[in-house]
Every structure is written in C-alpha cells, then in structure tokens.
Image (cartoon, rainbow over all chains, first blue to last red; front, side, top):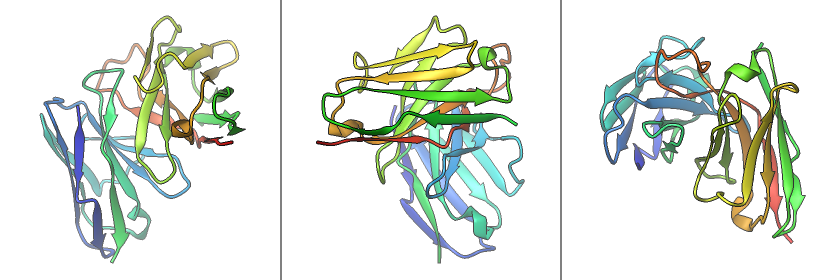
Length: 107
Length: 125
C-alpha cells in the first residue's frame, strides 16, 4: 500500500491553519497514524486510528478520514509545530508503510 | 517515564555486521510488541522488523529479510537487531519503537509510541 502525502512542503505563518493530506493506494480503513518529526529527533505520535489524539497531544491537532483519504489539521500554528509530518498505515499489521512526509515551514 | 534508548551503531564496511540494542524502561516490556524503523539520511521512514511480546512471531520487510535478525530479552528489557551483509543502502538512523498499546489492549488501531532517539549506522569503505 502506497501513501502519498501532499503538499511536499507547506509554507505558513504562526496562527494560520495547516491542512495536510495523505492518500492511500487502497483502503486502510482507519488504520492510519500521523507523526511529527523535528530535525535530529525521533518521530512523535500525534494521531492514531485516523482521528484519536495520542496522550499529551494538544487539541489544535486533529485528524480525519477513512478508507483512502486522510487529513491532519493544525488549527492555529504555534512556533513549535514547524516540522515534518508523516502519515503511516498499518492495515496489513504488523507490516506498514509511511508516506514520504510533508515539511511544514515558516513563511 | 517510558523510555527507549538505542545503542550499537557506528561505521562498518560493506559486507560487515553490527548488533543494535534498545534498552527499555518505565513500562512492562514483556507486554508489548516491538519494532525497528530506519531512516536514511534526509529521507523518509521505513519499517523493517517486528517482534511479538514473547518473541514467537517475527516479521521483516523484504529489504532486510534474510540479512537482519530481530530478537528480544524480556528479562533484560532489551530489544536487538543483528545486521549482516550490510551495503550502502543500509546506512540510516535505526529507531526502536514500541507499539502504542499492550498486547491485551485491543482498543484502537496500532501505532508506534514511543520511539527511541535512534542510533546511526554508516556503511562505507
């Protein structure tokens, strides 16, 4: 299963709304997660089950979608949110695939 | 606090071997599935290996099958990855990652949480 993320790079300013897309080549039901990765750091789980926030994740992060089309929304960008975001499907658990990433940069 | 810490990375020649370790703390290690994920420099994430809580069930990505071996020691709370027949394409940061939920928790779909900080493997002559 191939995950395609768009856009590749998103340039926004703090306070703006960010909308990141992830499209699967076939249905993954809701077996989709989103991770945030900052330079030199490990990925951090944000969303699992397509829409459930992981422990400690701020409410400005939300996920939606099912089947093949998914969205990660950051309602109002904070300076610490500028990072790379990956979607990840586990419909063929324990195997899985990641999207190629969306880099969210400060405009 | 839940914590994972990898070690064992380094510079190795093509065709060489290396053993990575991941020390777990802050949770009941024997209750969780564990994974290895790698990231080539400047690239995306690639899942490469999975092991069940008892170690009885193991899966590999096709890219490493037959060359890498995942194992665990539930007494030492440690996860391992033996790397063999290494090539340039194996150069990457290697992360260990725990499944989000214990084996007995079927609520919600699987995901990796947390991750270790990673250990760098460089394959070069």
